[in-house]
Length: 163
Image (cartoon, rainbow, N blue to C red; front, top):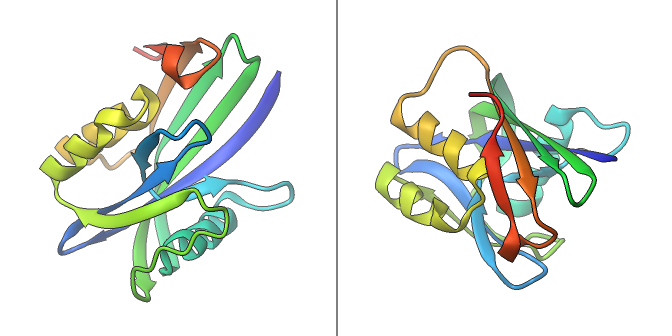
């Protein structure tokens, strides 16, 4: 079983919450919080700060807390994904999309309705926690668990395991 870890950031402004559009290898686009893979030897917050800066041009100077974790067991791919989503308190810079990996193609601060629309193309392990947070943010760290079946995004189905 292969394990990988991703960190995502909740970054807000008067205009809303920041989401990025990711162009995947198969050409599809989905929306997520900015962030990315935590490399070996890197802490989640160091990776998150690096990824946010690379993807959006914003420099987060302070992360205040872990809001939720999501764990996805991809049965057919023999892979396990752990995602940590942290809330930013302070950041500087201008929103500029210049992702060196070429994955992030757009970034916008969005209100709740626009976020809900954008999440229509995102997998449930991304969309459900984000929608729940937008509905009523919580103070304690929450966990979301999923089991996914399928070998490609087009055939992927997922079920919650933490309910």
